[in-house]
Image 1: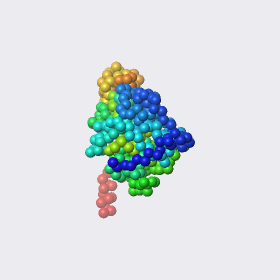
Image 2: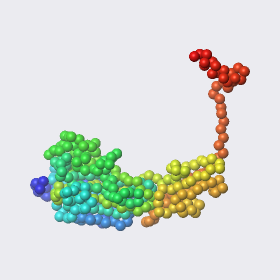
Image 3: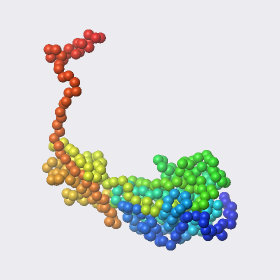
Image 4: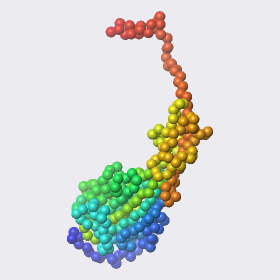
Length: 371
């Protein structure tokens, strides 16, 4: 065992005045996702939760609370009820529940325990999805840069994604967010380095809002998707190696939302919604949509791409298209096509007279004489 637990904190958990963070463990997984987590342009189905009932909750963080997000979902490797205690209170709850095989693969050869896993299918009415989160742990700072770290990940899978990808990564990199990749060194108190991506780290030793001794700044998980296709997200956190020293991930309420656009590509070039597309008389324009399952053009065509010529152009030149999917997901975009006959006018910016006698070679002769 790597840790010695001093259980002097239980009586302190209900002490008033230490925190502005409150939790509510009464919501079902479906209520947590649909009523708390989801934002605009996203639909969710097949919502499930695996883990201890006390390890999931909605939360509100107001006033002096310094976790960085005002409300949302808290998933913990321990009990969410203890999150409201001040950092001076040590929180370590062994839930006695199973780990998770995908998280095991990250921390191999160690095994995980007390996994809290929320997962669901979703579709997005654009080409991208994102959500905001904060990872926090009692493992800070004592076990930073050691082999004893809890683990979390956001696994996404679906069309265009190879296998299952973890999108809980440090901005601008492919490095997963963890205690060993985001910290300000190992310490029994306030850490003093060496820094590991510490611009994303908040040392909370002595803090009064939540019991976690350290946590990340607010980070964004995001992924490219195909509009209205069905994807799967698995939000998971667990203890690693043993069931003590709790960790948690705060998912910002309303932040799981659609971003980006659905584009019409004109001859391979993406066009913003309602943009004008120009082509030369006698040519054609190939209009294509983002990959999806179902397409409906304003012309009635249901293919991903259509070809527009002067002979087939609509009276208005306007072409709109719906991308549709399951669960009522749809996205709409349009462009206007114009065929024009090119012309050019040459306007001189200086003298246009030829050399005396009309012999253009006189310029070359002048140059040669100078040589």
